Length: 425
Ligand code: SDX
Image 1 (cartoon, helix red, strand yellow):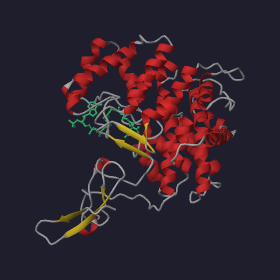
Image 2 (cartoon, protein in one colour):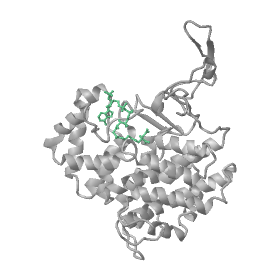
Image 3 (cartoon, rainbow, N blue to C red):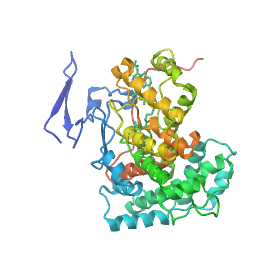
Image 4 (tube, rainbow, N blue to C red):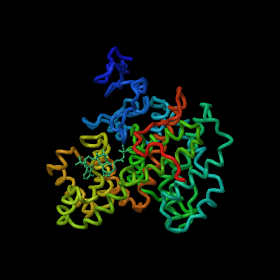
């Protein structure tokens, strides 16, 4: 608690209340508005642009400076020096693991890197070619049936077991979405491989054959998962928290997060970026799309640009761009036409006064799609990859919320409908 307070009074009345300010470790302090209803009013903040919905110690973002910290560590340093599973341990436990803890955690995740035999039956219910996000959302929700009786959300050990199950199973489910979407047989999880190598083998391998995955692609895949791991109270994480606040099954809460992530304004943007670059097709058409993005009468947005919080470069986009250059060079695709359009588009947008004035910079989704396409991942799978990386963030926030005193989330509204009226006759 800080010593600062706000006094709120209503003109023309003697209504006045004192609102305490709660201090934060970094970034904005918060005004505790619990007493606001005493004024006879609610606060009004559609889109929650000015609202802190909870207290958290997991991730900090400074949108003005383009800073992203996971448990205090800058994302750039984690991307360079850590790996995805170590970052999962960090997000969940709050500290980097010792070498022994890291080895033990990797073994724990390997022990959960399998799915129940009924999962193949779940997939068989989807037509081949069904959108992978539809399948992922459905299957993760369905898996809640397997663990419902074994999960007491009030029990910390059960919650940790749930986080391990999800980190272990999500890459398998994601790969199964790709295989069923493409009409290919499933490739079994091979825990003799590293986490991201196992994932790529399940995606692109041949059942029963020796894995043959490039170390450069394995590193790029691991970095993509790491860069998507968590991002404070974004729409999908807030959805998981709100679902979890009712005590719902954690797999069902993650399915809710997957649904929220799917939208093109959120995690669906990576697929939309690639579709936009393909629609632009040639650098000569970029100006036309920039004009459309600025036209209020046109619903078109420049996908991969802008962010509710970042009013500077998204630090993940910078790291993703470096990976993009590495992967395309490794694959001999440095002249990839889409990459050339993307780089030209970025350059033009960053010089255009509309984008400069509105502080619209490339976000995490701008370059990720180009890397994933280069790796051989279809655009329909991009958001599934995002969800696979983000699961640790979702479930770490869920665990953090349930590890502390909480109440069911229940916002109010500004009612603008009819006043009371009688049924006719
Ligand atoms: C992610 O929240 C997170 O942390 C999300 C995320 C995560 O890791 O979880 O970072 C992942 O979702 C990244 C964002 C991916 N989405 C896109 O790339 C889609 C394109 N971007 C826009 O839809 C938009 O920028 C949002 C949705 C990302 C942000 O929406 P806001 O904060 O509600 O912004 P806004 O709509 O209030 O825009 C402010 C102004 C508007 O103009 P005015 O009404 O002030 O005249 O900027 C304009 C908008 O029209 N604008 C854009 C634009 N983004 C905003 N104009 C053209 N192209 C764009 N991309």
